[in-house]
Length: 78
Image (cartoon, rainbow, N blue to C red; front, top):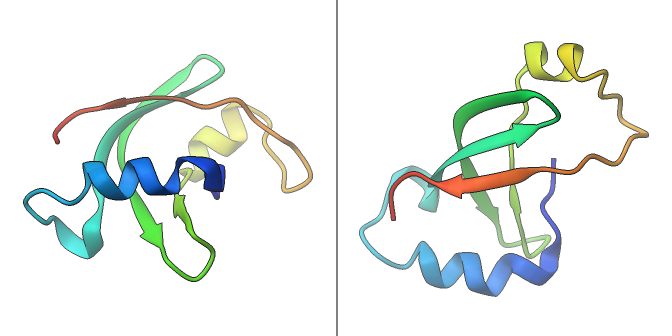
């Protein structure tokens, strides 16, 4: 899932510290009633960050490609 590009510059600034793999940022993400720990990854081609959504989250929250979803995120490490 692509995060809104309006957050790209801010997230790039946050990720400018000590580097993790691929410039990722550790987050706790919540969609609906499902919360999980993961990482978001920068995608410079689309000027956004990508949030991988596990299959069990997509299934539990009935997410399909046509849907828009609200995601809450909290940084775990910066």
